[in-house]
Length: 113
Image (cartoon, rainbow, N blue to C red):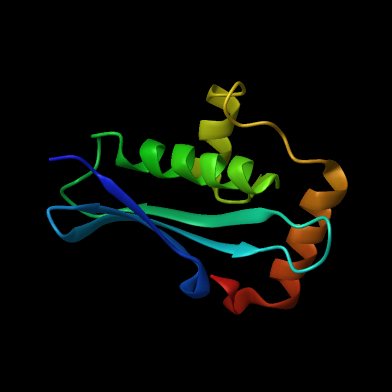
């Protein structure tokens, strides 16, 4: 069965849903100050669903959402950062000042994830 991607922006989650169950999640937040960005802080694939590309589909969808909104992605999550390095054509690097602002916002509010 195909994976359905659901953006639960208010909850700060991007979900991969398979057979009606959550198969994976990216926890994220929106950078509060301009220039805005989507900031990925943690990616999880549920036990028993690993190794099937669900995490990669989530990160790809995350970058597509950001591109559609005209904002960069800051991949603070190690998995998302590795995926971005492997897919530079789909994952443009965020400007250094945006990355710094995202890290500062996370440091100021660790509850963001």
